[in-house]
Figure 1 (cartoon, rainbow, N blue to C red):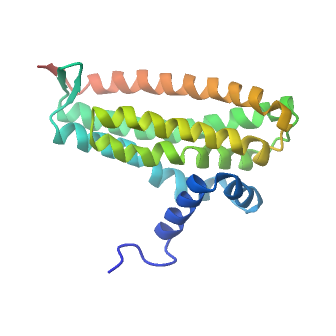
Figure 2: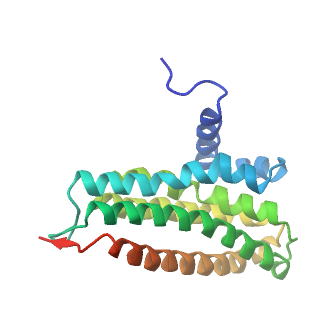
Length: 208
């Protein structure tokens, strides 16, 4: 018995994810040509996939009784874990829109053409590997390290997609990518800081 029905949105999401991870160049060509709206991309792609890291990290931390780093175990409270998950999810959803606007705004500087929908496609689909890698956070200590590798593959997807979706000069792809990478890291640091502040509202963290 199949859990996912053939032709369902879930099956299409799984199939697109697999193709994007295994055949990224070919899949970016398909994505570039297909019609889409920001609302559709949010509902059909970003909202379900961006939930994976937040949910899996919460389950992992609560199931394993915290996070162990260099032999020291940190045990956040249940409320803190849940608040962090909600904050991470909400801020991630917002950051995709911000990243898309940055991608779109700088496209002409690198020989590309402004197109907000294409920029949003790029921001949304390039995050796929990192979001799917969020499953690894079910193992809160080792999983976090492994998810970094998934995040690096998302950056590779972004690099491949920039000249295809934004029609930028291929010779300027590296410069374009470095700028977007800097924006991505800045957003990640900002999200991390805000999430830590929200998590602190859940009470003190026990250290064993």
